[in-house]
Amino acid sequence: MRILLLCSSFNGLTQRAWLELRRAGHDVSVELAVSEEVMAEAVELAKPDLVICPFLKERVPGRVWRNVRTAAAAAWARRPPPS
Image (cartoon, helix red, strand yellow):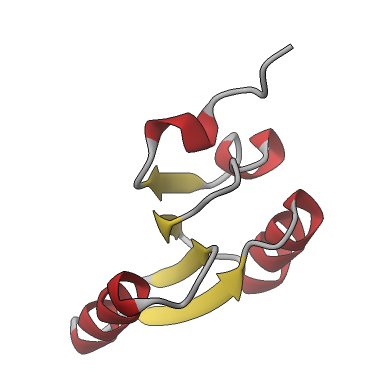
């Protein structure tokens, strides 16, 4: 499975997730979520089957989670921004 890890930092949690997913035989890439544009572009380029967000401070853009399966560590990562 092609998996994209979107993260705010490649910290110990994200490194462990990357390692375990690779050990399980998945094709895993990592992208730092510095902006919504970067996240959307990373998804377009990687064409993942699944996006995992183990450590994310920013919310996942709607154009990402509407079109690709996502698993965010924080439920708020998928909510629309406050009005």
